[in-house]
Amino acid sequence: MNHCMLEVLVKKAPTVRFTQDNKTPLAELEVEFDSLRADDPPCAIKVVGWGKLAEELQNTVPVSYTHLRAHETREER
Image: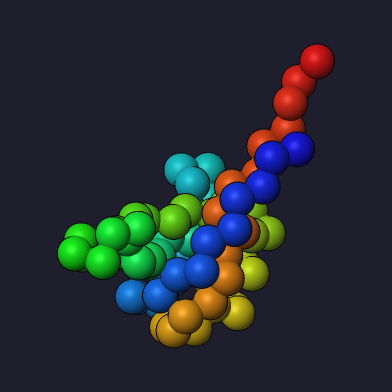
């Protein structure tokens, strides 16, 4: 299993919507993090979580600096 953790500034609070079947929640939020070079502007990305993670994002992520587990995968064998 691979993990990536980022320390980011949450720019906007998460918004939640549902899939077409109205069963799976999706949370979207905008975040930014410092670039590696001092002269470059911060990098911005959109984070999407679904299912239980979407509910967790909506309930616990404030607009501020925070740690997000940004990516988790499982290797299939």
